[in-house]
Length: 184
Image (cartoon, rainbow, N blue to C red):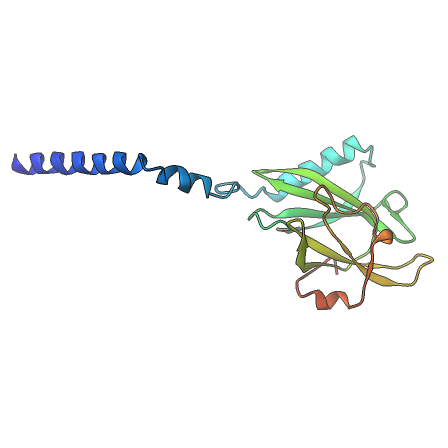
């Protein structure tokens, strides 16, 4: 009987301690410091394929379109974005200066189209540098009437550039960017 009374007293004491802590505002502070993505689910590859199919439907892309993709966290939120390089039918997705790449932002268990960039050739490199919280993407510009050179696609707060031709040339090799090589 004394054991039950002791447990009841300890439970009341613990409950009153928790209530007292809650009134100090510490709980609110801890909640406000929790990252937005805490507990968010990294969407599966099948969710990416579904998002690509929706993209194809909305853009009247050929039903027989083929693509390669990689998953990489571009915005350091713990969720891996989908970089999709469309390559077939070549006459639809590609030209003499490259193909179309789409970036799908990973959300909580889903994807949303973030941007699309034409005239892209592999390999690409996700740089260690970032702009507006998103990783810079190094690409080689070639097959144009301009000299072959490397550029960084930088996130402008809304999207990556739709064309690499207007971007400033970087004076180093893509391998020197110090991060992940994609679409080799």
